[in-house]
Length: 460
Image (cartoon, rainbow, N blue to C red; front, side):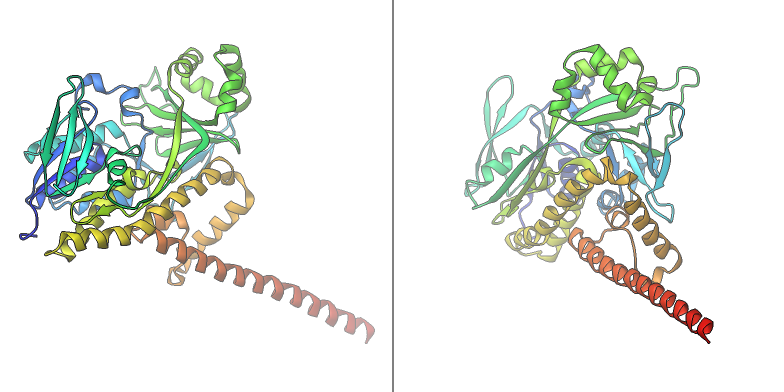
């Protein structure tokens, strides 16, 4: 990498942008990070309206991205120390007093981790300060001149504009990426944007007043599924649960601003939640918290020559139902650096190689996240889903040499490419269906043969 450019601008100081800046800093680059919003480390910027993020589920891909940073695992250890293991989903009927049904994520006991987005982001920003990376907050990207290798930023509040030069520009500025929008002026980019009908609204379950502990099991992701909508709860390190109501606009409209309508809706669908949140707090949170959209974005390519590349949500924003948004973004950073190392003498080749390699995986996890929306709100209670999951897990546990694994296990507990996970799952299900059919046919034929033998004996 010594012969390559040495200054990089990272647009976006969220978790993915911060990790990308750390990677380049560790590789000896001069790094500057520009962020539209304020410094998340300041108390006034910790409100819901600032972060606008569902609690994060950190799994193997994200952990591997932190592991590959090259700091001896120091940052990874720090991050993991502030997470909570979740061993599975707890499926609730919604009836007070009824214990939920635990569905483990992995037959071998592996787990994902609940991570507070703001806290994780602060840990990454603090690591950047230790590396003397320059951070510029309240700077909005307004222009890119990629032929001149410059970016223009506007200082929010003053309107002052500043032009900054760099050898490489990294766009990690989220689903509504200004970098991606400006990049489209330089490349013929395929772009697809979809808003789903479901909105999300955040709630909080406080700790138990008497014990100060979690009110429900802290080592599960809790789901109250209702086929077309659902309520989920994810544990936080402060003994609260960050909760999300996923529901279509028309259901929110039907409730309106009425306390009576809201409580009637929760009594019918999520009665247990009323006791957990508290009746007055539930109403207050419903009336004050925003109902936010869920977006899915696909695009290609991800780069322009040797000068600009987009990563994370800027390249492949997805709905949150597979818990892979940040994990995929962290994996982007690690994979990008793999391609830079493979092409030490040409950044153009490195970015082209990365873009071609990563784009199919970005598209695939977008589609899987969409599919998992249906699984979480409806399929988790279906007998067919539970039966197939039990068969796959039994084969994985007792005859591992067959190579049978659930798709969820491969997505969350491995670093197999998303596209390859889908290909393996398809081949696996064809094989399993063939075996099941053979066993069924064999059973029927054995039954007929036995009945025929019995008939012959009676005749004789």
